[in-house]
Image 1 (cartoon, rainbow, N blue to C red):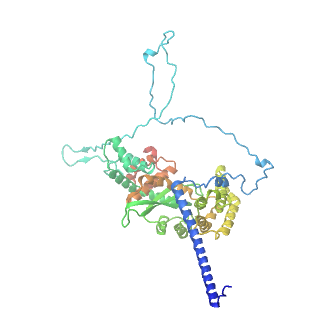
Image 2 (cartoon, one colour):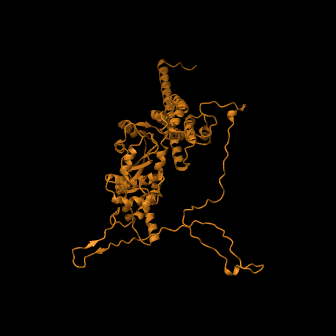
Image 3 (cartoon, rainbow, N blue to C red):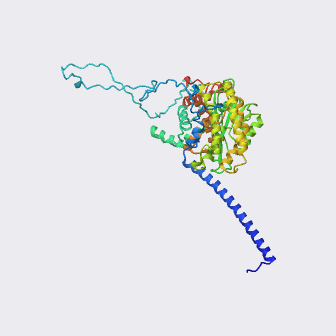
Length: 532
């Protein structure tokens, strides 16, 4: 028989087992932490891969489309059983006209040059009886022709006058004031350059090459850039009036995007600066007020900058923004009604859903449940747009149809908020929703409020698209000049005004403006383009 262990040996054995058990528990804990960190890193990796290679769509697969875009049942009602067909299941499909096939006709307002094609004299004879053929009509077809830019030189000749009897009456004919005194470019040329860059995204070095190609003259890109900076500074009084109009609006949208400025005092060329975007939708409570798009450059994204940009906004106005915290400071400082953006919120859940394997992206996934509920909120908005109802009726429908959905979202949030790892994509989505909840649910209080900040993102998109071509601003004054010209041209676009014609008229009349009324008459919706 084996020897019976002594008390000391038994105690040592128990201690060794306890140490081994503690070590196993510690290793198991480290393994759980390692697996969690691995899963979080895989989520981040998949997110970055989608940003680089995937299509830029927020719809997370076919299942999620069906969850809220093609939902069969209406809000607040139960679907009828499949075996029973009721009158409510039948809908009338209105008749419609199919668009005519083929090429669309060219604009009748375009100038026409008629090219007449005739038979040679020798072929205008009937082969049967030798009679001369007579014209009985024409067959017409049209092609679009393009004449490249016509570059010309305007030669100004200022006539000198003198008295033939003495030297005391020497006079020189005055030259009309120009936006850039003694500048190289005319008002028309400056308007073309600004429109090409800020509406068409054509960088200045390409424009200089075009001018050289069409005009046969080598024009320095620096000369073109300096001219644009000067006109961008000259329009500052009109941009200031735009800001005054915007700050008086009942609803203001806010956002910001990055801009690189190469030569900025005390900062490296790689430092990130910002363009702040502000806009109105032109649909205030009184139904008046033109839509405005306003861009401002700043090296900072701080609350101090935001407070400066929104200084003077009327108390009680409505501010729509994303979840960036500086807008909370602005709202508190000016007693604003602050709205949150449901599109930003939904985007977090879409990213969380796309991070999981495809076989797990069913409607039972928690992210899919939130996406479906948010989809129901947008169904109410889409139906209202289709019917063209007014703000008062929209407010009633939101209280009737959207408020119960918000209650469901809040209930699901409270249950799941602390059941998900906070650093995961789904956890970030839940915490974003929780932190923004008071602002997100506020839009149902008034039919004039917006459900999201999409209008502002659409307004800032032309700047971002153009930035891909010209990449950066050289100097701070250049960045601010670009922001000013963007403001004018995008405000023209949203008001249905031809930006090129507006800049032509503005550049021609701005040097004569002296009073506030003179500058007010130069706002995009006030200026007379027929006299340009």
